[in-house]
Length: 88
Image (cartoon, rainbow, N blue to C red; front, top):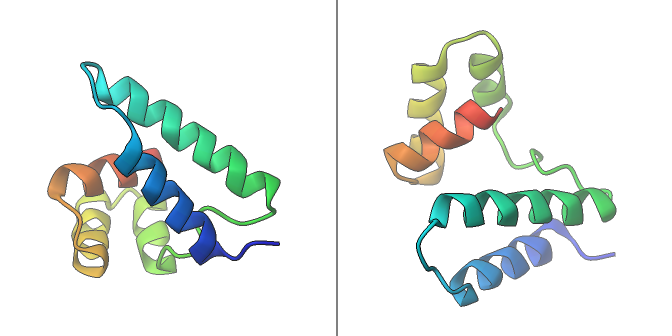
């Protein structure tokens, strides 16, 4: 069974190879759903690498704090962090 790092590498390669015409948001959502399905099929938790504090902040409605913490830990953009936290 592949480990989480192998799955993440596959996901990154898929994103890099993907043709990005108009409608990126819809395509990204489809990719995210496919990746989530793959992780579930492999019995891997898609949220395993997420700091529990980020999850707790998001669950208690402290979205701004969760976004800040997630950005600090991952280095993603504000938009990516906001979308991620809202998806929780």
